[in-house]
Length: 179
Image (cartoon, rainbow, N blue to C red; front, side, top):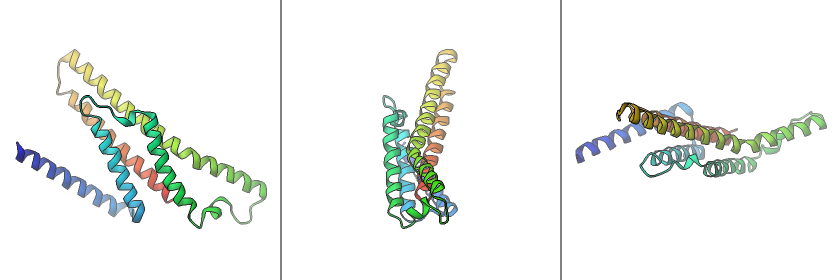
């Protein structure tokens, strides 16, 4: 039994190493952006997987927690963005009329401050729907057919949703950081 778990965890570790190496080579993520990307990816993924354990809850099914993580991630990217030298060049363009410059600044401010809401709503809805489908599928197949093994398919689908959503969340924060 111990040999099985050792082989299983070695296979999982090998798969993660290959995945991160593939991400590193294909995306060109470097420096602080790379550290933040990997940290957010692993944090969201493992937090969601811990929610699959019996008698526990997926914390990303709570909108407040999801908003807190999204807002703090966005705040880090926004503070790094403000500290850059291109902040005011980004807001205004040379040769623009005063009215157009004012409208562009308003549009950019709304766009920038809507990012944490879009991040949190996207993650909250997708994780909640995946968890709800898993529970409904488990109850349906268990009561109607009495088959437990088909319900494992729903758990695999939810695991795939966790993987995709953690990648999308961390990738969007990376894009916001390098925008």
